[in-house]
Image (cartoon, rainbow, N blue to C red; front, side, top):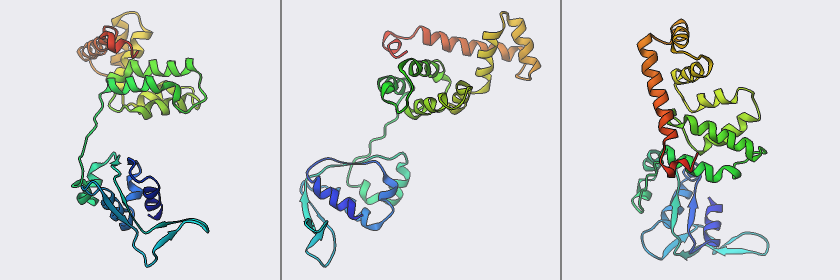
Length: 231
């Protein structure tokens, strides 16, 4: 709480970005300070309530208990519901922008950041991971930049990292099985026998999933030039 006040003072008139909302919501003092910083007036008064006239930082340094600032504030959160519940008055002081990135946008950004993701993996490994994700991303129910970070961690930890990563991406088992069948068998007859024997469904269901699976992969191969640059 006091740290928030001190840092706001040292960075007054600058843009303040808060990415750890949970810690900010943990005390009334932090919430009060945020409300002061987010006032709609151009020049905002921010104060630390105390009987002292100055706030002592060290033996040789102190800052005033009140200051004025033109700082703008950005609050990042994955759960705006939580923010709205606890800081409705704060939201009323600003604008709420909801960012919902498409899978293609995530893929584009991931390729841009690929060399920067924390790992000792070389460029070849990073590209191998990227290609694996880019093959399956359209089937995924869960995809973010963290997916790539987790993939790098899996690569260094387990041998079957590709399969575990597909589970992390929440790829339905039917698509994973279809990929295996296409790679393993040369004919539909062999694939259907395996499909039915392992209880994945009937013959018609096999062809439905195969069509969906192969057409999606074909779309990827026939992607627009802009999308091809990502892959």
